[in-house]
Image (cartoon, rainbow, N blue to C red; front, side, top):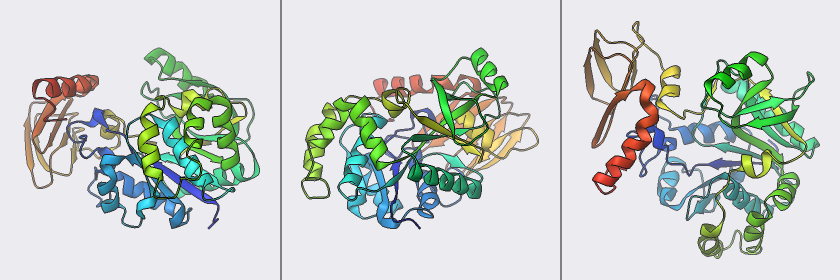
Length: 358
């Protein structure tokens, strides 16, 4: 195992599109969706721990999740959890991790990954990451993993690759989530890959990229030089972090930088971003009903996904294409093809009941 390998797990999201299962108090990265006994963040940690020394594993998350992370990942020391006092998207989150790593070493191969993705083909994924680590150790390029699309998908961003058969390949363009017609064109050309949000780079390359493309972010973190890995770090972060601009690493750096490469991959990936993506991955009965965690009996029903707490029984009659989800004090029943309204459900519930069900 290479002592210069580092992993940064981003774990600060709320997962609002998975309400009511995913709640602000315990969002989806801390949940066991499939009854495996391991939450999404635990599976993510296990995956990268095979490639990265324990002391080089870092988790960046909101301060309110510190205790949950320590409970679910007892292998971590407290100083391996980088606590954000405010949500500012992925660029400040990564900039923070880069400064921390700079305080520890001047030679690092860094993996950055979300905490809440599902990987079905673990061995193939590990081989892909090994290939990526080898590439960034030898090249001063920014690297992202692109997923070969299995269907036209409007829920993901896309990466267009340049000509050639080598892998990794140069990135030609990044495109935000397309409409249905454009997604179909992307799928049919064979030139476009889903943007996984998983990145690899060496310390020198990402540090320089922040200085060139996001100086307004990196200068804020560099002001704390000498405080990282000390008892003054958190006080500095608490005072500075809320003033950071909220910007994604894709928009702030990846879409603007030169020499960006994509490692074209197939390893059974899903970002588990919506109930629809969870339904697609779940086992189903002969009528295409999916049941998670709980028990179920269906009558004249098809194409549904049901998720209730363990030990509960759902009896469903005459439903077609619905989400039935219960968690603690909320039961939601809505059409699968109308799940874009879930954010509105959350907002309305928060307004009417003063945040009681957020």
